[in-house]
Amino acid sequence: MLRRAFGPVLVLMTVQAWRLPRTMLISDISCCQSCAAAVPWVAEVHRGGRRGVVNMNMVANFHHVPSASSFTAPQAVALVEALRRAIADRRRVDELVTLFDYDGRVEVEGQHFAGQGAVKRFFSEMLLDCQFTGLDMQSYSAAGDAADLDASIRLVLSSDVGRRELQLQVRFHGSQVSVLHVQQLVVPHDAPPIIRDAMSSSGQGPKWETYDGRVRQKIWQRTGLFEEGNRFIKDKMELTTGRLIAIVDRTVWHLYGSNIDRWALSVDLKLETIIIQGNEDHKTMDTFVLLLDELKRVDPLRRSEPVLAIGGGVLTDTAGFACACWRRGIPWCRLPTTLLGIVDASVGIKVAVNYHRKNGVGHFFSPSHTFIDTSFLTSVSTPDIRSGCGEIMKAALIHDVRLWRLMSEHGESLVAHKFQDSEAASLVIKLSIDAMLECIGPDLWEEALLRPMDFGHSFSRTLEADERFQLRHGEAVAIDCVMNSLIAEQKGLLCEDEIDALLALYVRLGLPCSIVGITAETYKRARDEITVHRDGLLRAPLPAGIGKCVYVDEMTDREIDLAFERLQTFMESHPQVLWSPSKSFNSALTHDTSAPLLATSPSHQGEAFH
Image (cartoon, rainbow, N blue to C red; front, side):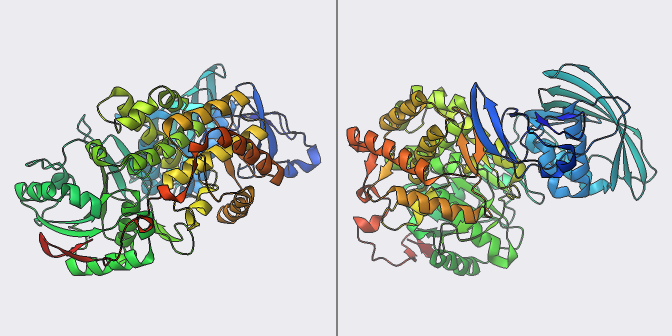
């Protein structure tokens, strides 16, 4: 708890837009009455018996909320104050949403909004439609204790059409809202409804959803999407013109092109394909411009012919960026075909190409639909499966200990069988997507720069940009996760046994801990570069125990040196985790790549093929 000397109220600080799964208990911060505005923003964090340090620069001050009670529970203070901020600036709705449990729900006028994505949709639409201008709390009462609290809050919300009175019945579980029931007591004449018409919901609905304020992305998990006669993609994309424009990874097309052709014919679609390379070394401005030229050639209708991107994360990033720029944005959908694309790139809305730096030019542009079909993983190479495991380990270390346990117990078998046909494989994929949705779903536009899923991305941007290493994205993330975990050990956030278990698991999974050419100085340079990217503060997420997250604004040269020495000692006895560029994704190191960027498909005259 954060104790402020200027008042009797203890404000329970729950990290909001950067999303921690559990309440952080902040030790007392001393501050005199006369300098309350100058509270030190570094506090000790106690989690699971450990003590670490977290920088609280991004935490907004809470204001006292008047109530009829002499003491208002800090959970209620936080909820009302977050709603007040969201009314003043709708971009702050993400901070309101993160006060809810991941599976928390809102009940209003017979409708239920379950999960953070749906809760955000409710608040976003309510604030947009009702145009509230102010908020007053009229009464408050509560029963229970800090662990399980039932609160009743009466609010008056002002707007240009009058004052609307709401009764909120709130069930808190710890600091988080598990259920919020909203009842309208007084509604001004001609006031807009507090919720829009109910949308149909059934077991056939999407497995996950995101909403960026403009596009509601539906994430579907199905198998056999390209089986003859399967209309699922055609129906969900609302393809009414008889044409499907698809940007397809070259390898995917070689493997599945004839199947996709037969499928398109069976559902009365003319297939227009743009087939390109999907490796990291083709995530370039040249590929981006090539895609713009190809979009000009196929000339999709502005809204009626969404583009489908089929391939790994590199391809969907590049294709999404081209769609974002063509005609200032045309609708698109994606079908990730790699493990990394499924567990990492299937939720977010960032699209980009590499230019001067990793993802140097890009935008935020949500697809309308994401289709997940894990049967594609049977044809993914083992190195690319391992690359996906790097992203899974990121989520396991920083967010979900269940993923850690599953990978520890089943990881070797999952890699060997390419995440097919097992309950463990399905659960790992589900929990990985859940983790991404929980951590980035409430803040798709990255307005907050404290983000758990930036773990594994403090050093990896620099490593990927270095042409000596030629690392896959997931490999760079895996290396980053190890080094950051070793730094966390130096800070006392992870214990020696946890580090030993992590290193041993990397050996069993076949993940890299480093690559020839990396030195401690590489990490120091990467630290300085990412600080610029994060607006002048390091804001580095670190594990404070497996599956828990804190943020630090400092990594000293000595901490990096000691962590690197520890890693070097381990690699001397386990040389297989020290990789060389011979394992690179880049075919230029081992194959002839003299073919042009774009050629003609022998089976699709006039279509792009490479």
